[in-house]
Amino acid sequence: MIDLSQKYTPENLKPKIERVWQLSTEKILRIEKEFDISKGAPVFTVDGKYSTRGWTEWTQGFQFGSAILQFDATEDEKFLEIGRQHTLERMASHVTHTGVHDHGFNNVSTYGNLLRLMNELRIPENQWERAFYELALKCSGAVQAHRWTDLGNNRGYIYSFNGPQSLFVDTIRSLRSLAVAHQLGHALSGENDRRISLLDRMIQHMAATADYIVFYGKNRDGADVRGRVVHEAIFSLNDGNFRCPSSQQGYSPFTTWTRGLAWCLSGYAEELEFITTLDDNELEPFGGRTSIEAMMREAACAAADYYIENTPTCGIPYWDTGAPTLHKLGDYLDRPADPYNDYEPVDSSAAAIVAQGFLRLGKYLQAAGDVNGERYWQTGLKILDTLFDEPYLSSDTSHHGLLLHSVYHWPNRWDHVPAGKKIACGESTMWGDYHARELALYLQRVINDEPYLTFYLV
Image 1 (cartoon, rainbow, N blue to C red):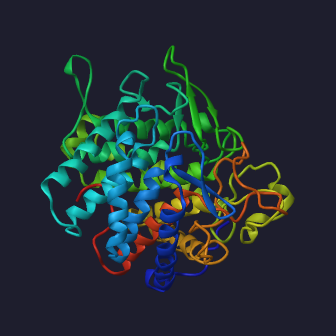
Image 2: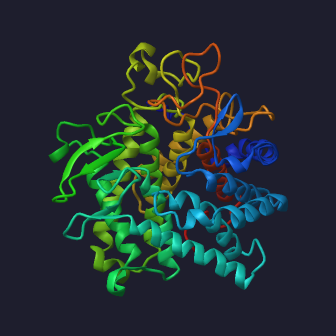
Image 3: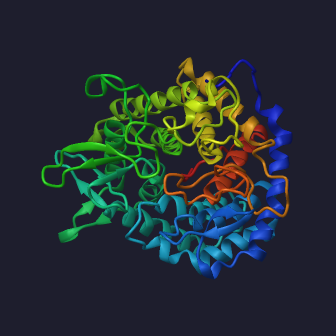
């Protein structure tokens, strides 16, 4: 269980955040110089160098988005040019990619960050550049929303690349694309020019995830544990009924893949922030603010409590809470995680993603007068404190990665196991590095009393 006995303030963590950006500078430039982008998107490191894993190129936006975040944090314009030029040259195919559920990852991290910087007056206003970013985001949200499985009775979800029967937990955070496109006044045009609300599909997907991906230890989940999160839910396309839980990257349908929980918590937390910006009348056709926010809060808090209770004291999780040889580590929840053990990998990328979720959920609940707000806020700060230090922060400037001990797909053994080791360790992933930077930027803005970092337009 995470040890929350020490109390943190954001200001205490400022030196660690500054060090992150110092190390990040060299790593982005080294990847730019040494990685052959013609071979595809960088996914994970092997012996400290980024390599590809040709599948859906879902990490390319994190690569270019990292440079944009570096500019945001440091005002070093060479990183703005790296991110902007690569977005122009490389990201168009991601905008119209009909085969993935990752639009919020790729396109909001690039086009979205650039549009945000223009709105914040951090980069010069340019009518055609703005129109370019906005058009990309509108198209991305509509294409994402088109991957739709209709369950009937105003129920449905954006299906994963596994097919229409598959609801993935990952997509909850990729809903960013629908939210931004909706804010830009866009909708999906269907057969006979039917106008399909992106906000409606976003809310329906959040509800399906809350109903079938998150478990609550009651009713249908009476034999399960509150807050457990499954990677995938399978539905019958014949009648729209839920059939069973499943897992692609976790150990089993009956354990929690911790990065999946991280996507879930972080997604609901930032979507709660987004929902607060909408007018009550806008939400009324989809159930109303009270019921929508209650659904989201219940799912987020259940996942948050489960993470706290099933993660080692330092806040860094093992890759799955039910990984088959965790028992060989003894009382592993009563001490800090050991990334160099001989049995099961940790996943620092899950920690980087979930930390931002805890901070955002904590802030949201504090504003609502909920006593859990401070607990979640402190959890986020605790995780950040651990991540932005050895052995997780990579101080070796020759290593491409910023955040060490991240894993991709351990059941398939896609991750690199160093010589002399029995498990994956010492390597980085592009999403882990991106979310470490996004986490650092989020808290840096809080510390400096700068505009609050959001994915949506303010």
